[in-house]
Amino acid sequence: MAKVLRLGFLASGRGSNLQAILQACRDGRLKATPAVVISNNANSGALALARREALPACHLSSKTHPDPENLDQAITAILQKHGVDLVVLAGYMKMVGPLTLRTYRNRILNIHPALLPNHGGQGMYGMAVHEAVLRAGEKETGATVHLVDGVYDSGLILAQRRVPVHSDDTPDRLAARVLETEHELYVEVLRGIIEGNIKLAAMT
Ligand code: GRF
View 1 (cartoon, rainbow, N blue to C red):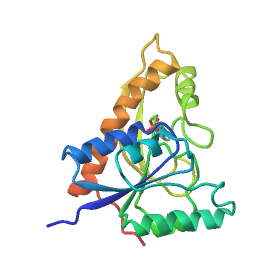
View 2 (cartoon, helix red, strand yellow; view 1 turned 90 degrees about the vertical axis):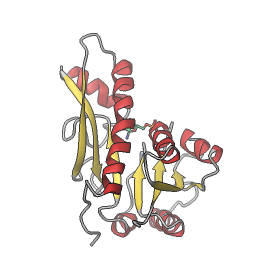
View 3 (cartoon, rainbow, N blue to C red; view 1 turned 45 degrees about the horizontal axis):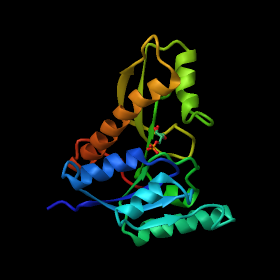
């Protein structure tokens, strides 16, 4: 029988993508084990959720590890200690460090609330993305799941799902519509990886 993948999450905020994935693990849509949640934000919804769910949860940031290299090592060590196979960025607002990137090469996923390569890159997060989509007069936007490669929003795209933009949309309304799609798409991509329909390149 195939090994049950162990998921490690990095999250900074609310944690709704984390919640959607945990729910899918719980109800059997995803045959994966949530192994650990790491957050750079001690007060994040994501950490609170992990604790409510009795998952291993750690706050690791420049507050706990002022030296970036030490922080990168600590993150990798925690992921390895919990036997993580796949790292899921779920609203993680920090750059992943070089050691973590090397250790989990082609095994770190991110979700972005637009159709990359449009409306991505440094500074394009949260409402800024949806404001840019509306400003550009786009008729559609969407969600993108991609591999993380050390440059913001630039890794290999694994899947995208389109979402219509309505003429009376506000950034908030658009964000809410995209977020629902993110939750579905992230679970679908993880299922694709687990079932072998989405192949990740070798790690080295
Ligand atoms: C999502 O919109 C995701 O695309 C982006 O950050 C947001 C995180 O939301 N990377 P949540 O914390 O999962 O609710």
